[in-house]
Length: 361
Image (cartoon, rainbow, N blue to C red; front, side):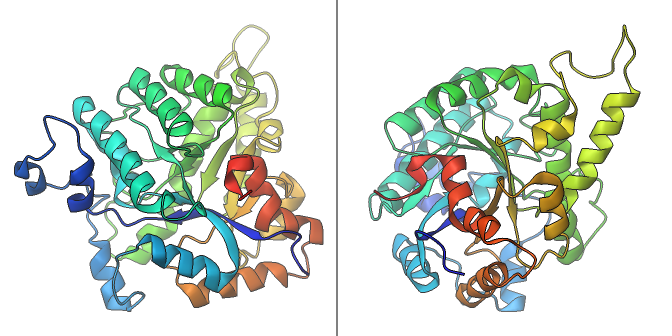
């Protein structure tokens, strides 16, 4: 089939370099060479991902410029992308709020200067410092209204450090209220594997298979069962880079808990939860990234609907140009998917999630 309008990418990545972010720091960090003695972001876990990429030969180098991104979009035939951090996916583990706030601002300013100003085809979600919720609200507002960013990214696994509460916690509700007011989404993205119960793995394929879905299951459970989607009826949230196959399973688990762990007078979940968890998950406000090679994709669509599924390139992580083309072809040629579903996954749902900011014009 042919997509009506150009394809959109819901989730790509940058490769942050501390030396570049350094130029965007505020006082007392600005111009202090001592800052470069330690990594700006906590390491994601015990893996040196550059070593893994080098062994596998996925990329000849791992520096991605605005031009590289535009060349990738042109090569695949994608109109625009929404970009997420890489090292910054460990942002939630930062213990020091007084450092988290200026680092978030520096990252958001760096992206704007180095990428968005180079090409309006390159959009991004903002890092916001949930270590200090009032500052997170202020930074989301600044990033959207002044920098033109399209939403916020929250990290799904913070290793029991830094942000020490699940994302359904009421402490974070002011951020969700601001996102509703600004009409921008919140996107949840994993990467760290630390303290998910899999620290004993020492081969990355095992870790990578589980680090994203385990973290997303935890946060989806928290946000649904604590009533976030009831309390904020216009909030749009995406759970990214874990595929879609896990979602019907957790819908069944949460529905069972909703039905079993309540009586007329007592219930073991938030009073804000007013209906079955699966009803919130099937709504038009909860989104997921999906992959063409997922054998469970047709079944997941039958349970969740296709209105919340988005194509995500994940470039330049384990994805390069040939692989991205192959994954898009898998979706376009998938005989069990309707043309309406393909249209949604490759364009329309991205616009529904991010809003008009996700596309050009």
